[in-house]
Image (cartoon, rainbow, N blue to C red; front, side, top):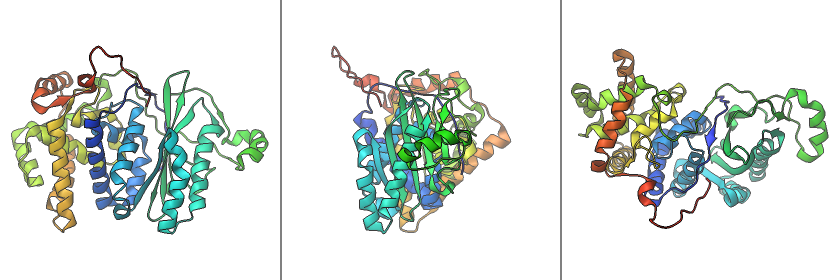
Length: 400
């Protein structure tokens, strides 16, 4: 699953509030479990290696839809949530932001000892991916987040992010072992960041002289250029705008949720009586679990499941978030004891919404959707970080 791209990921100040962090941990764990249950650990690593899917995952979890903070918060939520399920699911998340990234070698060695991996080989891989992205590609970004995700079969993915102090932008790099025949032959699954124009690329075929000079330092010999096939360009503006969303795809989800006949049929698929707002969220979450890679070209659309912590496109509807979590959690727990009906219905919900999109060609009225969500926000327990700001006290900013 080869992916490459360039995107603009604005840095934000602040932190993820506890009321959202706890829910992100639960939802991220449930989505991971659903993907692994239906498709396996390799498929989950492939999804992590796709920058569009990764951004959509953060959006559906309630993070700011365009912020580089999605990287830190999603990796942190998955690491917390999977820590006690790692052996069961066969997925181990190491590293993280800042000081946690420096713990990666020790964590990898510990896992390797328990699972019978070559720990030193994994450590070398971890260091090499960081070295190439930090040193061999002079694009102005310095790595400050490094996360290494390894499966019980030894397959791995790397998600790491660099900061450009001058532009205030971030670039996210994705790697996946199943796509890597050789570290120095187009090794990335994706590079995500602000376009810097022509950069010094020491893994390019034209850089042979420079490679030779660096060989004693880097101890590796990159030979081929890093390809760029997909581009994820996230704007600086905070608000979600109609041009950021595929209105036909959003229209299909809204039709399934709010048109009576379609809503009734969707409930039959899920074997559960659900309100339209929860059905809307579940249809979007189902796409994150079951959607094809091409479905994630507009990550902003996935924020219409549970809003965003900054209030865009609307505050996080806590009641809906918790109902979505409850449905997914009970479906997964039932599947563990052999009752797959609700989980299969969840898969069919994604197929149903896609069929409506194709056959009915619905298109959402963007302004009307936003106005409607804001009108019902209070009744759904809508909350954003603006509700948490202390009055008459200076705000402590922290970059993600």
